[in-house]
Image 1: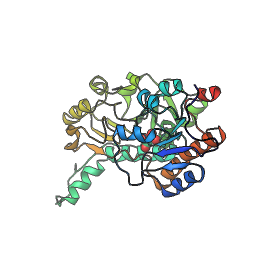
Image 2 (image 1 turned 135 degrees about the horizontal axis):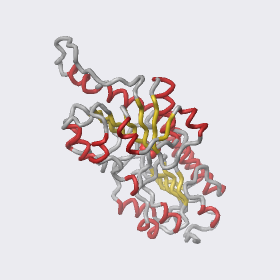
Image 3 (image 1 turned 180 degrees about the vertical axis):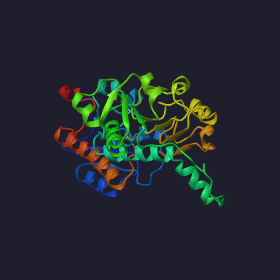
Image 4 (image 1 turned 90 degrees about the horizontal axis):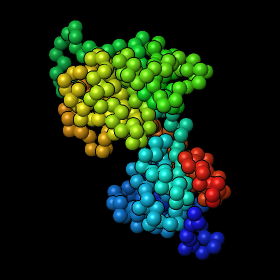
Length: 337
Ligand code: DGY
């Protein structure tokens, strides 16, 4: 598809940055583009986002901005949307590819940071860390008792991983090498024997994963196929002593079913960084002691968020200036450009 342009020949491309980001990233972008930013971090309605995107060749998005056929039809000048996230379920890739709009994401730079957080959430969940901290802060710690906040062991237990991409592999390495855990995983495709050996991980069916895991970590991408991959039926297969950690995407877990299972103590506990319909959180989760909740921060360290922002900005520059994006999701667009 050829793209409309109402810019005079030689004019600098126009780019919209949809959310507040590091000021130095805005500065970098301004060296190459006419930039409209949102450093006030105003909550733009969809209509406002659409109006601001009109006439822009590039968009810097952060995962919350839905780019679909409606947006693409309204913004024929748009050539690239660079997501500052590895996940891209806010993009309708099929519609973007059909419209000749390139999509990019930020893989690799967040892998280890996100795996660290997955492990932190696993530990906090198994060892009842936030629940016990709330108890202490509330002044309720009067005496020692043998079963006070007794949790589940992490070392030597069985770690189950659903979704064995780069982040899943990072969690497997931490579990196997750092904590002597037996690692089992399920994924759309099996890892190579070399990678399995490196992660000390064995491939099992999804049912076996659910039945055997002492700690189950979800790291699979969201898609219509993975919607409610963990619901009441899957939770019913898990051990009553098991924990469930979701650092993948909201919607992969049926949060209502999980809240009910946690209330009825059908599994031991859960650690959740992502939620269906976030930033709203299912009210049934909020008053439960056996769930650790965090506001989608698995990749949130200063160096990693900066690296993600840089990579998204570099994708805009590399594509709009040189025609060579760094981490394209739909590279077939390039062949047609
Ligand atoms: C990702 O990179 O997909 C994270 O969820 C965004 O914070």
